[in-house]
Length: 574
Image (tube, rainbow, N blue to C red):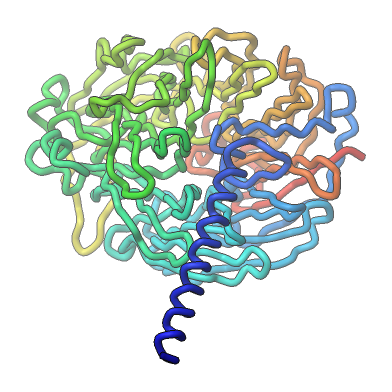
């Protein structure tokens, strides 16, 4: 009886602990549903608005913004590309080599730091590293991916790891994690990097409490239907991945995620891509938006934005901006090509996502003549063959990139950086290399150039998110590469590549304030509250993969910028 009673007590204790944990994660998921005074997930909330409801800082007083503190981060190869997180007055941010820091949100006093031991040989072989773009938060833990294929949970109070799970054999596959995970109920979901690598681009669902892998979905040939879209079994080396976080729709219990381009990135099949070349067929589910069941990882529905992507205009940029307009519940998803897709939030019963609208934001665009705004059919594709190709627009860096835009519910406008640039390229035949380790498979060399009749530049546009109608636009001499932030105070913050942080009037685009942070902005920007005050936090660092070319393309100060440094700069009202 004594043993039985003890077993019953242990079972009851375990059930109670499980219930408490489930309740904790449910509370975390609820707090992630709406923007609030903290910043607890990559885009601020599941709505992916990159918006703060804080409103102490206004057009009238923004001129009084002053630096509250600066954190210099050592060993910052490619600088800081992270989007910080904030909760209860504490600021958390990640750095190159998957380092993590916690500081007091008002003074910058360091509370703890965590530096994982990485496989340096593997990291050195990678192209998409060693930067880290962010973390997830929940149940007293921070979750961070590493460039050598691990997902780690850290205690938020101490910085000590509570579990460390190896998910990818990076020593063999040469890929890992650079983007932020997403916490959904009791699971941490994370996608792997790099569509140019010959593997199958998995997305993982991991038990947030234990670190146990619960499910895995391959973005390349992840279903029998998808395998049939890869001729000659090329799904085995098809690339893919989902390197930036998606979002969660609690109403339908659905995770939305964007997927990366296929490998090789460029191919030589020309108009015969359905049956010829290095990866014949549509190549599902690359360059797609997929809807997954977060509990099982099963595919609910999808839309392939660019069938047989031949341009590296993948869909993994990670924004699913929740819009309720005209009685419709929608998601806005920017594709790297500059075409923006507006979807119905309810996955279709036929396994397909329902399209509400599609529009283009880039002037320099000729890879297709257009995309049908109702069916999604590509019109007038530019499919290339082996050899030299000229004036492909936009360039490989995309008309838009992973740096997030922002939606402001007060103005009803969505603000986004648009890049105007083109390139010449030479396509070469390649074979996937997987032994002894996987190697990059691009399939071309390329040179950036000015668009026909103009100069390479960027602009920040304010648009109706559903129709694409422009309310205002501000030009920048070089494409900004950092995320944007809007606030309930009526401001839009634009961190540019010259080091200036701009505050614009959200209604008009008029510049109201700027300050120089001393180096390129190439990461996230957030707002949070600490001790009753509103703060703005941004990060700097040079160069990124894209800005590696800025010194050659634009000259000027980019020739002299300090490389491989990183800093967190935080502002508040004086």
